[in-house]
Length: 105
Image 1 (tube, rainbow, N blue to C red):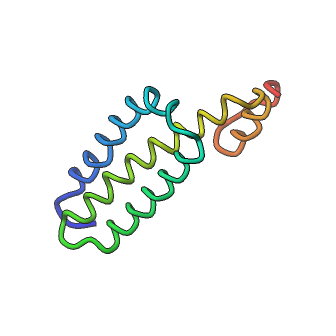
Image 2: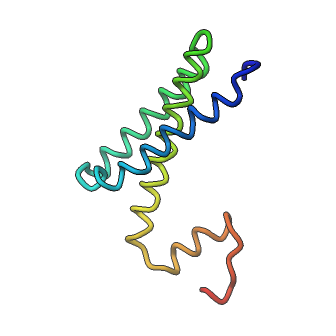
């Protein structure tokens, strides 16, 4: 990115993601699923635009903070949907991303 702000970039990404991860379980049940998907999509586009079109150091850092919130919201949405499926379906979805034993199926 820019010389000298790599550490700041990591902090700017992690802190909003941690705050969002702590608050989403309390607020997420009050917002309809379709609206949450729309919010996550818009936040993702704003993060991309801010990182690429932002000027100076502030633009990319704001985009990184928005990306951290988007990441936490996306994980929350995935886990909310995964809870409604049968365990075998969730394990099948996870085969490509982790080491899944055949015996669990």
